[in-house]
Image 1 (cartoon, rainbow, N blue to C red):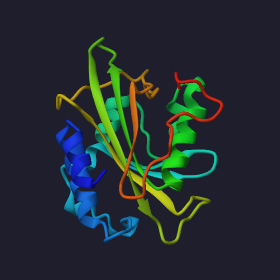
Image 2 (cartoon, rainbow, N blue to C red; image 1 turned 90 degrees about the horizontal axis):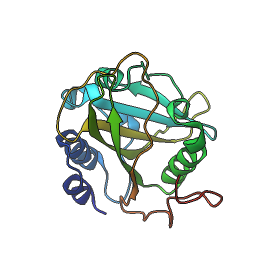
Image 3 (cartoon, rainbow, N blue to C red; image 1 turned 30 degrees about the vertical axis):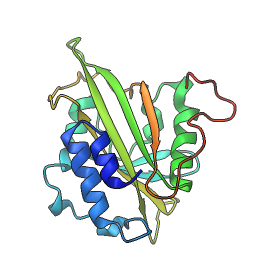
Image 4 (spheres, rainbow, N blue to C red; image 1 turned 45 degrees about the horizontal axis):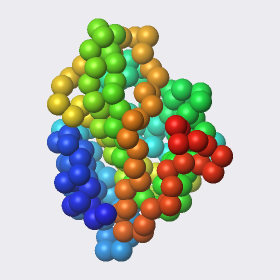
Amino acid sequence: MAPSTIAAMVTAQACRALADYWSALRPPGGLPRRAQVDPGAIPLLLPSLYILGITDAGVIIRLAGTALRQLYGIEMTGRNMLDGVAPEHRAARLWRTLHAADHPCGMYLLRSHRYASGATDNVESIFLPLIVEEPADGLRAQQFIGIAASKSDRRWIAGEERGALMTPHVFRFLDVGFGIPPTIHPPAESAEA
């Protein structure tokens, strides 16, 4: 799937804008470097932006924009993303992220998010691979830049008791030119993960 196809597949304007930005950074036949990401070039995306670092045991949120704190009700920067995933889904989420990093490919998630008010909204996320030339703190050379955005462009505020990342009802690997893993399910997992 070409980056232009990724931008056309997503609904949220912020997801399309991130796919276009990532594509503009990308060298022919390769992946963008983390050092190329210029926050000044994407000021409107920053509040909803993630930078994820990958270890063999976790997905460390290196940066999470302020809108993500409002969305999930917690400060996410510095946390292991898996801590916010329901325990029964952590192994599958880690497996998918490691496979996306190793392949490399992107990830697409769509989930219904329920807020403290009882309102629900569909939140779309994409994560696209980056290369880090000198990884630190035990992180791998692969990272992801990602974004989470309301499909309806709403701005909800989660209650403080929120924090669990809802299990996506749609998950796909995104082909960025190197193919995708043959399945989204870990070998020992059921199709429910």
